[in-house]
Length: 396
Image (tube, rainbow, N blue to C red; front, side, top):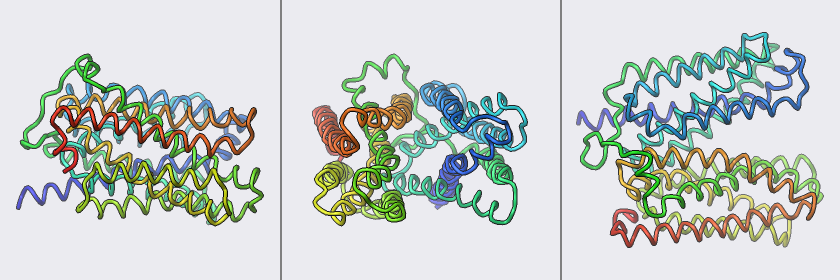
């Protein structure tokens, strides 16, 4: 009974952590014009902040396995939340542009450490169902961030108050992690803390390179659809901006709703079956979007891509310890999340470059190609792991 209560507490804290992880991501889009005005810099300087953020994220996500092998997981989470909270306060109070750039770096490094550490912990302790719900709560946070800023502006309040509020939430969460330190341990099926292998040993694992490559392509696809669908609909297909905006919202809404739905379904379905179906669904949805048989079928394709994308990331995270071994999972999950961050930045940008040569309709084709590659790579990796006698575990 005590174990069940502590697990429930950790699940709830993990959900709150993922809401708080999504909150800062939703703030910048609306706040950026006000930030650039305060510091007297052009709007296109946003790229500097994004580069700084990604650099910070990669610094901690790529070394997460090493970090939590040296420092207890609860301490890492507490420090990381405090760092992100202070960074957000830096955005709110700083009158110097270079300090905002520095704050963006630490916001990324804190976020990367939280994201990776929570995923490592969840993969070792929770079912695929719980991990799906956890990622759904990230969507709640990302959706709430713009709402907070919009609500403040509608009441004639400063945008900076939103950063102060979210910063305070992060610092409060740091205290929660501090007070629950003994519970945050990476364990395996034996419920005992697992030893960590070295990064060098992790890199020598058979087919380990496939895991980060899948994440690289997947997040590039997920982000690419969200970033480009509005432009494709308005610039290439003559859809009115209001309608295209609703279709874009439908994509993100189906992604979040899908994670909640699959959180329920995964209590009854095998993870492997869900992943094969999901990758196939992405391909079919992208095919409908590419074919453009009718506006209605294109919308169905967009929604289907969102729903099919929903379980992929959390399910892949949840089976990583079973695929590579629990003592190497921390390193591999760090590689996966780093690849995901890079893919989310590079693949949509690459798709945009292709439009200079082939027009807007090349972007849906890239989604279809990425979907096919994902299914092929997953089948190769799962086939390899089955030969390593993990078939029953992966499909359980």
